Structure formats: C-alpha cells, structure tokens
Image (cartoon, rainbow, N blue to C red; front, side, top):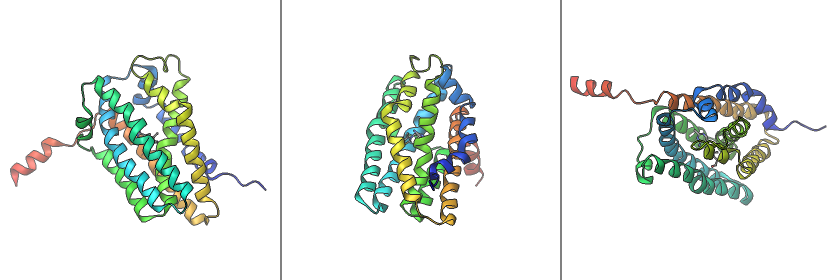
Length: 235
Ligand SMILES: Cc1ncc(C[n+]2csc(CCO)c2C)c(N)n1
C-alpha cells in the first residue's frame, strides 16, 4: 500500500488559508501591478529583518540535524536566504534609496517579532522535524504564490514587481522548495500520530502568521508610539 505523503496531508490543512493570500489586497496588488510602493517598502524592510531571524532558524536546523545530508540541506537554504533572497531585498531597497545597513537596522515590528519568535521557540524546544515544520510554510507558500502570480497577465514583465514574481516562481526556487518538502516527508516518516499532529499544528500556525504578515504590510503596521510616549510622561 502506498502511504500518502505528509506534505499531502499538510496541503489539505493549508489549501484554503494559502488561497486566501491570493485574494489579499497586498498580494493581489503585487500580482496585478497596482500595489502602492510605500506598502511594498514596508514589507521589504520588515521582511529583511524577518529573513535574518529565519537564517538563525536554518542554522539551528543544521545544529539539530542527525545526518550530513540534512545538515547540507539547511546550510544550502541558509546560503540561499542570505545571498540570493536577501539580495533581491537589497536591490529593491537601493531603488528606494535605502542602504543595506539601514535595511539591517529596521526596527522589528510586532507581527514580524511574533512570527519569528514563535518559529524560534517551537524549534528550540523541539527536534529537527520541528525546525523543518517551522520553515516549510515560508518557502512553500512563497513558491505557491509566485507560481500562481506568474500566471496572471503582465505580472512577470511588470517593470517593478516583475522581479519579485520571477524570483519566487523560478525553477531554482521551486527546486529548493521541493527539497524542503522532501526533507519534511523524510523527517515525518515513522513518527507517531501524536507528533504528526504537533508538526501539522506548526504548519497551520505559520500559515496564519503568513496571512498576518501580508496584512501587516498592507496596513503599514507601526508600534503605538504615542501611547508609549504618554505612558512615560505620566509615570
Ligand atoms: C514572511 C516571509 N515568509 C516567507 C518568505 C519566503 N522565504 C523565506 S526563506 C525562504 C527560502 C530560502 O530563501 C523563502 C522563500 C519571506 N521572504 N518572507
């Protein structure tokens, strides 16, 4: 009997959530080319600091890996994040007149902090399979979005957002995503149902965090600065 892949089971849980990203005004605007640049700039800055924390998670994956092959997969993903994906961000930032140093010094926002803290927490507490479950949604959902948007008329050739769509729908990135899915399936193999439920929960939670991240960018989320100032004054 051929058992179903763990990622097929995961897909059933995230299908509706991920499809809702495509209706979100930020993603829709990016794919259709009318997204306000300020909103994209907000995403870009928060995403840069997100990717720094994500890189720590990848390094942790290498630490917790039980074999060299798994260590190498995490190391490859780490290199890809720091050099390829973050280069896309640095390139877009230069078009806004933002230097790499300024990008790096972005003040972490509430949603970004909640999302990365969640991933780092479950990964520190768990094993290598928990690290992989935390990372999976990020790579896979962006590839899903990229490939969907690439089918929308004019998205790939858009003078500003085209590069974004090309990057996340690229063959190279699709291959990397498949490696992540393969590794998740390998790590889930033979695990008791109780543990699979735990891993599934992580993938669902990170999928909800992804939605919140799009929303954070759309709303250009800020910390309630005035409130903080007033509290200091009255104390
Ligand atoms: C909030 C947020 N979620 C996912 C990604 C996409 N992403 C993060 S790491 C990685 C794989 C290796 O580079 C990919 C595709 C992002 N940029 N921002």
